[in-house]
Image (cartoon, rainbow, N blue to C red; front, side, top):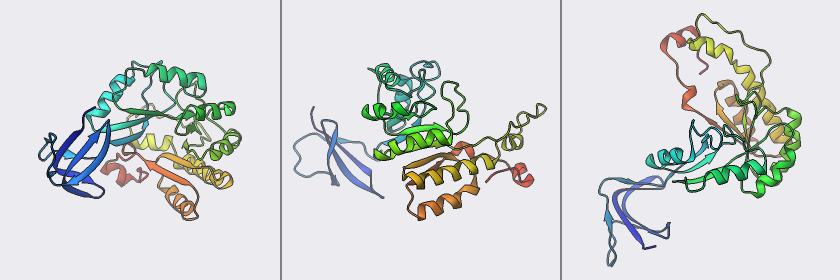
Length: 278
């Protein structure tokens, strides 16, 4: 593969934006030089003011193939990603069918991706009740870590785990220094549904009380400390849990957290009513 040289007035390097030339050989960046390269015998593609930057990594993607490819699939998902500058996707173990909770299902997913990838693609394994024996076979196949739900996932073949289930798998995951990703909600009752106003955001918030999330996060902080297992809390929404998470991190626990913009929608009326969680 021939060497490629790309020049731009706006190349993002670390925290800076510089005029620079990026050299690529055999699909890898081999050098970055300031300005336009002197005494270079090859051709340089000048993209002017267009930005050259590192590709974005999206580690929380549900590609859904195999099994629910009509929802999304490797071809369309990775084409859309690369068009937006996302060069690496890490696929969740659901909502594909079969779910990626054992080695056989993982092999099926990899086969389903053949000749359909337009970006780099990695995979999370899944933790469900009773699959502790599948953790190391999945690790051997190269999963980046594991995802579990503490409430119903919305997919019947991916049921939620209990504390007892987590106590079986966390020592194994910790031994391999991989992260365990948790959807944190401990549901203690079935919320009443207001059928007269099913588009009310206030009603939706009351149907998923913050206590469910706060209790689940408290559990994961406790287990993280007990097993020294890397724990990552996905899409945090309860502000109540920020302080306990910060305190756990200050104590050196291997705990990380993300939030998501889809949790941050509210309007002035809801703020006035005290309905928003944020």
